[in-house]
Image 1 (cartoon, rainbow, N blue to C red):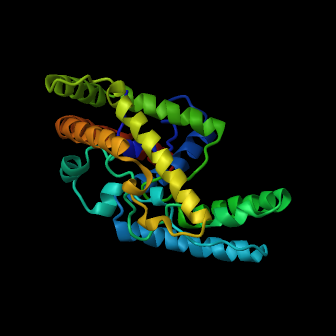
Image 2: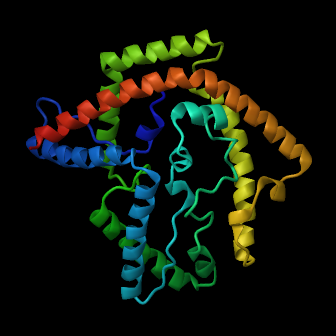
Length: 289
């Protein structure tokens, strides 16, 4: 069953049910409260997202320096939601960019980087120094997350096996909720009434095509950076020939046409799902209070 995109990137723990041991319930409650913060941060504006990463970067620079290492601050391009960066509503985004799969391959939100600038430095390190650098950076990132909390729009936490089990339980509990069941059935009816298949595989071809183009584009961006050129100005026309661009144009038109029709069906489901999801998290959080 397809869930809202925002919820797919949020790690969640299981709803503590009757008969569960108190320690497990308390643990789930603490994580549920953090996950509520993660969900809330999904609504952060563009400036708030960049401010979060500025604070994280400042922390990483200091932490790495304490270990005698250098970190170049940057905001990864995928740390910023495209629709948020563009300042568009769901409806506007769908009209202009469809799902954002094939249509925004060379789009770069202001203030972010296509390529991690630290990769070039890593490439020149010995294996031993590279391992030491990466270990220190992972530790610094954990410290930064503990200090500043979950990142807006994306989840940067690592789950334990037990947390993964709880995640599966709460997602299953939400899926079983009668309101979500009804919303899913209505979404299926709505999509099929518009002449589209309701299965998630409907857009698989678009996703795969977008991935092929995106991989080629990002390889070109990395090559540019490694050659000492700024990849920020790289465009599709710099990477692909006329035939590939024509094929991409057809894919973009197909994507936009589909998203305009399917979007409202999915958004109604997303809204219902999020209400139920929040209720489950609130219940778990309250259980440990």
